[in-house]
Length: 251
Image 1 (cartoon, helix red, strand yellow):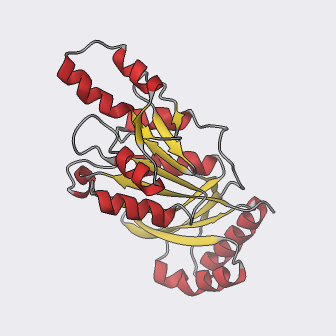
Image 2 (image 1 turned 60 degrees about the horizontal axis):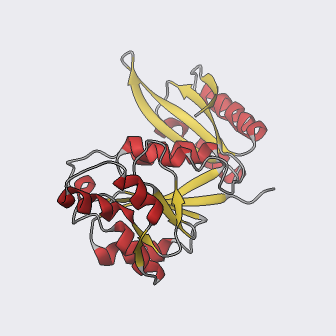
């Protein structure tokens, strides 16, 4: 069986930690990468603080196949991600001529242009990540992929990596809906998890039509095994006197 390919997401920005900006990048990254056969195993939100960015990048990059960062590559003083990545890798920060040419193609007063050109700074040796929106590109150093924090731009940059990254088996989900409480089904789920160690079983309560229920989600790479576990879960629910609904393969 092909080994799993793993990823870590680093969301960089004081505005996320303060609650001023709501992150939507994690969801898009996880779903897109998952569809490519890259499993997101870890995620952190960290501030625009040099030591924290450097230390975090150097901590996680040996542990996962890919690191994806968003945020901190704009034109202002607190956009320090590029500088921090350069320091993490022990290389110089340089102005990339391709990014600079793209930025300079849009006329602006000297002071504005100087700020914009901050976005042309990349670590020496970095490869560029295309930006189909026409704005400045992102960049990659080894297994660290650095992208914009603005969701539309991040999504455009990510789309340009389609087919360029190593992939492993795709993780699928199979769901069962049951009008039963989590505590009623907990022992059966625990036993099934022990028996089927290659899958992940999760339970997610809901309230609908004045009734409490649970969505039971089985995740794994073998769809036949997912269906088998779903059948066993349905049998456990039926033993409680309820009628479960097999929702089949879901995202």
